[in-house]
Image (tube, rainbow, N blue to C red):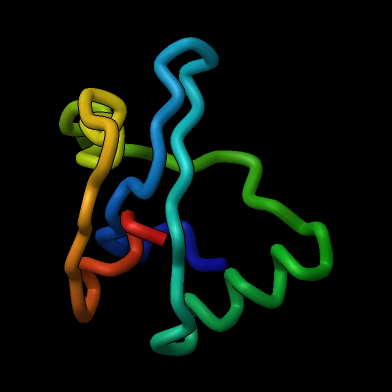
Length: 81
């Protein structure tokens, strides 16, 4: 993969206890297609540079409620999956 390209992805899940972040990436072009192929072949990127992480992700707040209804469409659906 070309390390000079950048792509914006939403954080789908953050675990503050292990400092791990999960993202969902859909194949939308050559770069994301190559990323998906590499991941399927267990050739994960050695480094990922993050410009800024904003908070814990909105799904973290669902733990404050007993019942939650989430309605989302388009690119906004990724964090809810």
